[in-house]
Length: 255
Image (cartoon, rainbow, N blue to C red; front, side, top):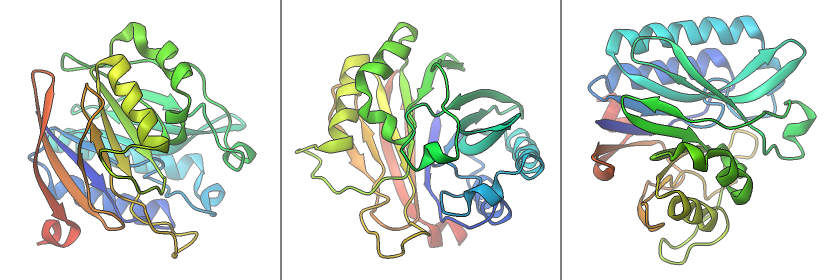
């Protein structure tokens, strides 16, 4: 099973991000799974409220469902989801048959996120062609005990970790978010696959984004993606193990 981790460019609107996501799906149509960041559809920025309109989100998701079905590609991506008066910071799985088969709503919200997003509920797992998957959304990685209590009974094999964080750390001397991700991988005997935004629209001076990481079941960081730049890493998953095949820049993908 071939998996692509997409450190995509962030746009201000659903229209812009849909165009970017669609481009990657079309160009990487030989892959089985594509993983995009937290709130990939809307972007994660100060104008998120204006983009969190149900008709905009649903129309965009319909197009992505059609693309997933056309290319037989499973998609993991973040999007705001509207439910009555509430808006959730959600992470979705769209199957290769073009159906939204999972929605996980972020529970571990930051103080600023809590001013707009509603708090999500329990975390479940998904059986994807015989592989048990779940998600850990951004700073929820710090809530180690909560997350383990939520998902341990499902025995997940892959934990997808969409994020919007900036932190640099040596692969062998893990700190902060990465230390927590390492602990979760070891405790669950699972692979943790991060997909981080590579750029901050709210503050162009922020550095230390990108650098998406893969943690093995022993908690070691297996590899890191380029920092502060768009890129795609292609992985091969087989019999519970992952290996990196190649990493491409956005220019290489465009060509």
